[in-house]
Image (cartoon, rainbow, N blue to C red; front, side, top):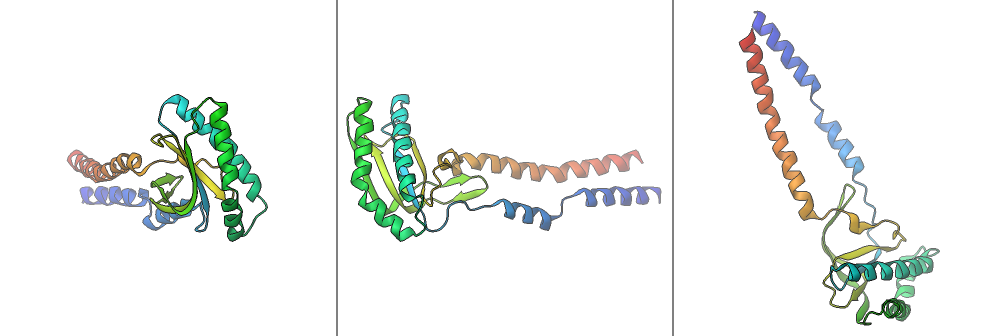
Length: 201
């Protein structure tokens, strides 16, 4: 009888110490904030290579282009108006890129294009997954375009958020696997804990 009462008390404590599934799901869903709206215009810049010098040039181009375009669209609320304005000013964006490259004594080999089917990799930003796919964007390719890319959202103006600092899906997978392994291990620990109590009794 004593073992039964002690066992019931232990199970009672364990059950009430476990998180409620519904509450945990609600909390996680509230954190999944989608930052980029469905209708958006992005900016993606591909560096020539991953060499420090090429990455530095990419950041210079990023700063000048994003600052200029952000000023162009800051008072625009209609995406169609933003599209017309950005498309019409592609020659000006090319001049900015050309100027940065020449100033840094780089060969002015680059490409600037605007389209609705620019490829983007999958990315985790905060708690929201932005799937890989083709999105509307201005794409700037510096040199061979083989280096790490940088991207932001031009419209609505979100270039103050560096989405490139999000986590790639490949990087996130090991952490997820570790969490799943941890969840599988927990019941084993509880089982041994109960056995130890019953043996003690």
